Image 1: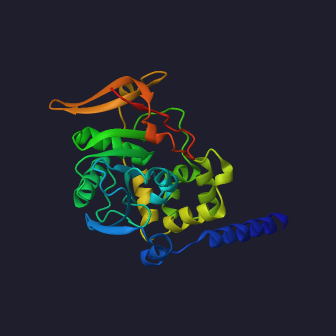
Image 2: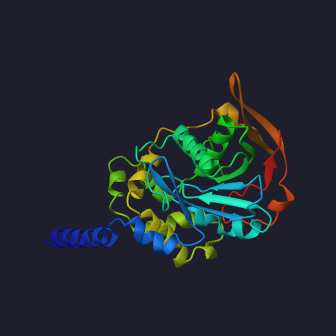
Image 3: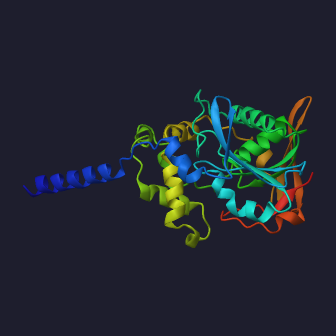
Amino acid sequence: MKSKVLFLLLMVVAGGLIIFSLHADIPAAELKKKYGGPPSEYVAVSGMEVHYRDEGLAEDTLPLVLLHGTSSSLHTWDGWVDGLKDNHRVIRLDLPGFGLTGPFPDGNYGMAHYVSFLHSFLEKLGVRRCIIAGNSLGGQIAWSFGAEYPHLATKLVLIDAAGIKNESYQPPLAFRVARIPVVKHSLAWLTPRPLARKSVEDVYAIPARVDDKLVDRYFELTLREGNRKAMIDRLNWPEDLATPEHSSCGEGRTVCFRRHAAGHSVTCCHMTPLWSWMAVVTSPWKNVLKKACRC
């Protein structure tokens, strides 16, 4: 009898947790009112209305392009933009699958597809040369783009960039859940807000910066129609990783990616200080790139 009562209580608790975690998609139009006001703009690229912001000195011929990480959005760069826009042109965007941009129409989340998309986006904005800074997924897109289009990306700033094997890396909790067979599919409709908070806390070195407003933004943009499935698809896409010998550069060294007529090459080089205009930048991430590669 006691076991039956305990079972029923557990079922009631489990059912309550499921109901508490059920969330419907939020229409993009509704989210645009909250997160896509001025200075936000939208441009049609690859069948999507891409959400972006182009701020700072319009006459700057070498803009800085900022690429966010998985499940993030262009808002993650607010602090950087505030520190740079007085002296530079700064372009940032919601990458496909995230933020207000929403999913790729064809469901392709391969790295080559992201690189092709970024090239089309920059063409639409008339950007012929730029500096690209990327965090996590954005960092992988940045170095992949630099290898494919070295004449367009003159410099790279890589912050905890994905795509290079790192045995010590521990993904946020939500990313780990999204890779569990069968269970991962439930994230398309079952999205606990505490899971969103924990995942944000996992990538912030200063817990005090993770407040309710920040968690609300991450959580609500994740609920943008199509984004949850896109996140699952991206996190389960076959990995585009540099080979181990290309990433083992040793202490105080980093990786430079180049593309030649014969193909790609990777060079390990010593790091030199970032440009002086980057000194004003602060970052909430644990692994902050404090030096830039000049090979």
